[in-house]
Length: 204
Image (tube, rainbow, N blue to C red; front, side, top):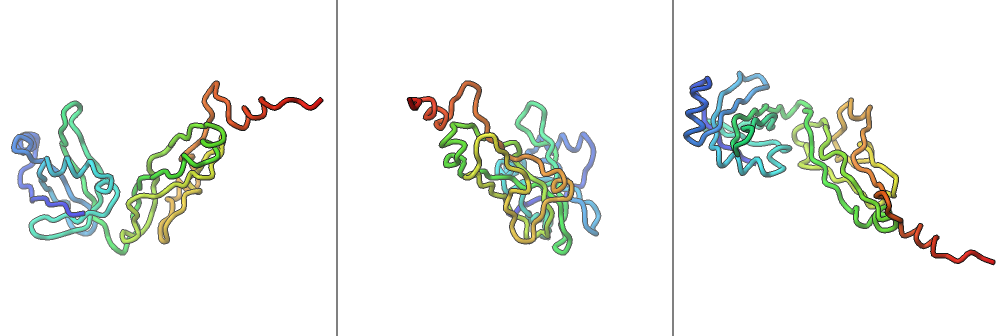
């Protein structure tokens, strides 16, 4: 995904306010061997880009002064009550160095799981993203979590997620193995299996 930015010469609160009034958002690019670079971006284009999941989790091609560099979005500062992006941080990535970043989780097949079909359970998404490490070229836009086999009362953990080649959970996530989804029967609900059992007539 391509992002166009411009070199920013002015710093300070007053300069940032003038840029916002002109429809611009301030930003910075850091990391790697190059010095941090102050940038400005078109606010409307940035606002719409931020609505795309891939903008938050993919390697971006950032073009500044006709030079392109690969970056990750690392931080976004929003106005507390206006639809306004105040500032963005991008980090340069090195093709030869592993990076740590969070990747969105896409949950699939809950509707065909035993938890839902047999027990009328509710499948909750406990986590919406997970932190991984990999080389930039191996970074997935998202990870799929297959819920087709989950049963009522069960949980799926981080280590249950199928990871692409070259992608691993970061050390602390691998050690903690947190829950990413769980299936529970709502209070007062009766599963189909239980209802069938209650309807049977005891043998004489």
